Image (cartoon, rainbow, N blue to C red; front, side, top):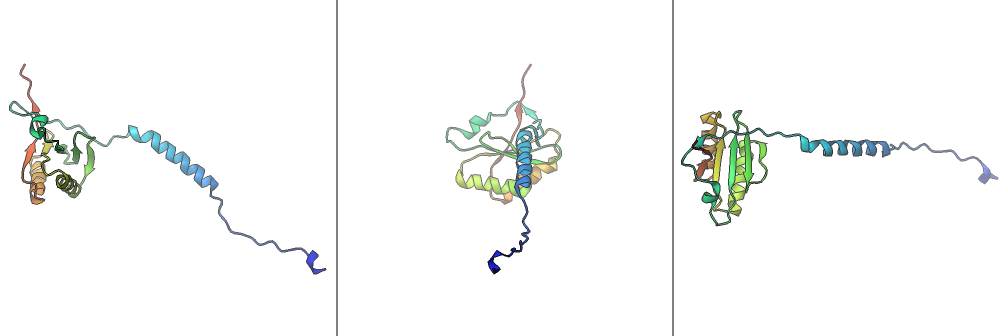
Length: 149
């Protein structure tokens, strides 16, 4: 009659993860909905000139991508390739690495540096110097074309 005795119940220490999954899904939805409204970029007001050429003339018909490095008045860097969205908030090393990677794919890609009209000259020279050290010899400067009124 030993088989009819009560069995002792063993306690199991388990965490119920279902509520945590629910919370994570709600947070994920909130971040997905709000992320398009968060912009980290700032507008760059380029200096104006009368002798500037359009970027399409510089890139030509070779199909080469056009690489643009921008510096705002606070010295923050941004990078764009082929008129894609500007990636902002990059470090100098990240910009140089990405430019070198793009140039390894398309060696004929023109590189241009654009600075806000209020950007420190030293910031522009620093970017030009770092690109030169990375082996990118020809770098143009971005400007807007003056409208004669």
